[in-house]
Amino acid sequence: MSRSKRKIDHIEHALSMESPRLSSMDDIAFVHNALPGLNVDDISLESSIGELNFSSPIFINAMTGGGGKETEKINRQLAQVANVFNIPMAVGSQMAAIRDRKEQQSYKVVRQYHPRGLVFANVGSEATVDQAKFCVDLLEADAIQIHLNVIQELVMPEGDRAFRGALERISMIAEELNVPVIVKEVGFGISLEAAKMLSKAGVAAIDVGGRGGTNFSWIENQRRDTPYDFFENWGIPTAAAIVESSSVAGKLPVLSTGGIQTSMDVAKSVALGANAAGMAGQVLKWLRTDGLDKTIQHMDQLMIELKTIMTALGAQSVHDLQSVPLVISGETHHWLTERSIDTKRFAGRGFV
Image (tube, rainbow, N blue to C red; front, side):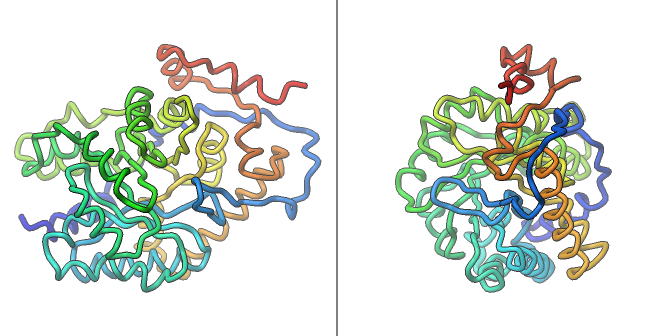
């Protein structure tokens, strides 16, 4: 099967996949603030990763590219949404553009329709420094995501089976490129141990890509004669992955992705330690079901709701939201406790 056809298959399977709440965000509850002392107009949604400043902690995360005119159209519409709100947008893996010049336009369209906004390039951990530079140059990108997708590759019938040297390649790319390097998982989460290794490798941020969003194991199993169904419930739920990754000494910036569907998911992500939260599958479904104009309305409503939630919590800024008290229960509490991470520090925040 061609890479282009596989990209289209991924989109169709992702859109048809049921989306159960597996991110564990429902295990997180905010402590009510009866005296928030703020007006909605006081709220600022600005956030940042190092020197990259966001107008909102919401960004459009990597989805597609390399599938010809169909993925070009999707990326054009996503870029139009990002441009309206001046929020960052990441493209899908650019390996297709590296291998086939005809596929480059399906990525370049993002910069054309989001000319002054933040754009993230994207390539796999198998990439060389030169390939990473090509991806950045193609988009005039402000940062590059290096995605980790071991489980997807193992389930993919024609996927990679060799993963030695990935950390060393990431370190070389981080050292050689003049833009921030963000390492992201694609739906199976980044652990505390992996976050520590990435921090030492010199990356600028971690996108946890936790379990709860698009399930690439399930998608690839649809293409197998003998499914590897033992991988379909694999991974670290997004809520736990945020806490694990943000627990690393040095406070490497963390991005939350993996089943982020609502304004409350965004608020909880930030309160758990993320600098921003990325949406992918939800935005793609809006586009497919409701069209571009309605998707813009959905995104506007999301921003309004986030400001409303922050007002209720007495959090004037994203930084303040990272300090509000919350209670972690259920499987997330069990997971973090077994991983020797103290959850009481979240509940105890804000004590006078």
